[in-house]
Every structure is written in C-alpha cells, then in structure tokens.
Length: 377
Image 1: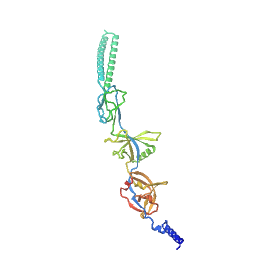
Image 2 (image 1 turned 90 degrees about the horizontal axis):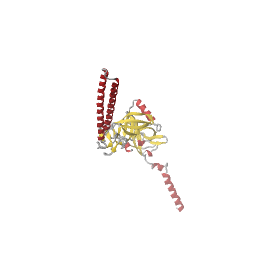
Image 3 (image 1 turned 90 degrees about the vertical axis):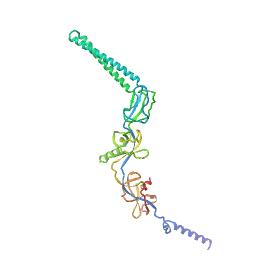
Image 4 (image 1 turned 120 degrees about the horizontal axis):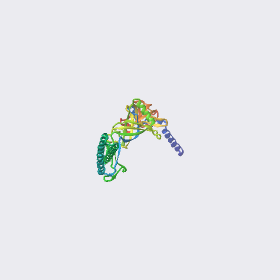
C-alpha cells in the first residue's frame, strides 16, 4: 500500500467516526442523553389570605410634655427615667416657699376685706334705721350703701387674688395628667426653671397604642367594597425582626382628607400593647387582610417563571411529558403563589430542574418532600 493510499484510508476512517457522533446519526441516537431528572410537587388547595402591606408608625394615644408653669429652683426628682406613672402622680417639684408666702399674704388681705365688709354692713344697717326713724338723712344712707358695695367688691378681689396665689402654689408640683410611662428628664434638680425652660420630661400612654399608615385611594376603595360585602378586615403588624405581632388590630379612623401630593389617605388602627413591645414613633409594617381566608390552588414560588408573555410553569402528565402552562398568579405568601387561572389542584408541577426542560420533552420526575417549597426560599 502506497503512502498516498494509506493517507486516504485514515481520512475516510476519521470522517466515518465524525459522522457517527453528529446529532441525528444512528450512532448519535444510540448515545443520546437520558430524560432530565426534575423535582415535582402537586398543586394543592391552600388557604391564603388576600392581604396588603404598608409602612406604618406607632403613635401613643396620649402624649404629654411636662413643663414648668412657675419660676423657681427645681427640687428633687420623684421618678426614675422610664418609670410607669399614674395620673396625678407628682414627678417634679419647684421650691414652694415663695408661693406659700404669697398665699399667706393673700389670706390676710382677704380676711381684712371680710372685716371691712362686716363693718360696712353694720354702718349701712344703722343708717337705714336712722332714715326710717327720720333722724338720719338720705345722703348718709347713700354713702353707707356705697361703702358697703365697695367693701364687698374689695373682698371679691381679695378672694380672687388668693385663688390665683393658690393656683400658682399648686404649679410648684408638676404632676402626670395621664397613666403611662415617663421618658428621660431633660433638666437636673437645682436648676432654675420657668415657663420658658422647655420640656422637662414626656409621658406617653402605651396601652392601647395606635398605628398610622397611608393607603392610596384605589386601595381604600377596594377595602371599603370588601367591608360592604361582609368580609371584615383584620390588621396585623410585622415587627423589625420579621415576626408577626401576636395581637390583632382594629381600624378605628380614616382621615377626612387625602394628600394631594401622594393621593394617600391616613388610616389608623388600634392595638393592645400590654407587653410594651410597641413604642411611640416605632416603624412597623402593617398587614391588612380579610377575616375570612379563601382556599386557592397554590404552588411553590420556585415553580413560576416569567417571559414577555407573562407567567408560566411546567406540568408533568401521566406519561412523564412536560407541558408548558400559561397561568395567572394571585397572592404570594410564605413561599407559595396562588394560581387563579391555568392550573388545577393535583396536577404535578416542576419546582426544580425546569431550566433543562422544553415543552413536549420526556422527563424523569421525583416527588418533592413536604418541606421542599420551604427550602426553595
């Protein structure tokens, strides 16, 4: 065999081997890949609440800023920062001695006015008797009447001044007007305080507590329709750590005006706060849902894919053939998505491995364990 013949034979063998490995060739068909393995899970009827979530802020029902109403040295503090206090409890004192002295002075002036009025009344009675017996004059009677009226007015003025002094003295005790919790004291004892000293401390009522949040006009209309149809609304809170606050809230107020800039309207809910987990000014997420929870067809979030035409998923039939199914999705909750159209309960949905699947392809399905959807989160 010549060198040229040997070279042609090698090229022929290489060409035959290449053809055997090309797709569609008999050899290629014999060496084809096995059906792709996928993880499937039946679509289930699951109760999922239709809910909306908003950003809200906690606000105390009552909030009082304690201020000095008279001037003087601040006395010993009657509380510790953060204490629970009762309405009427004394929290601060201002030196009372100058105001006690003022009250004593006004008491003396009132007593003097009382004595003057008593004397004026006696003189008026005497003048009246003399006039009746025609031994006195009308001029004298009129003068005594005027003196009696002046003494009476002076007594009323002295009594009013005494009352004002007593009020000023009462202001030397700064009391909490509400039950609640007192914040940090802003002024230390020994400092001179007065009406211009600002806030000494703040008392807030923490139980119950309100939560304010804004919703759009469209959301408000939907909520009102749901309420009209008999489906009461339930309000829940999601705290900063992601946990759900155990106490349900109740909507008690919708503002009468809407914000022209945001088209939002302020809504208020009230929550029990005996444990004190909610604080005035705290940011929370407000969850509003219907009291009746509907049962819907639901699949794990991992089963849903998106393209330009919308949402779809893959369903495996009894012959292990994958079918692409266009669906309409609804509420998403806890890793599950409700399917409002395009899927029936019990159909097997691919939740893992769908990247290797094409419509009409035969697959090797494996049933997912019950916790598979949770693992996909």
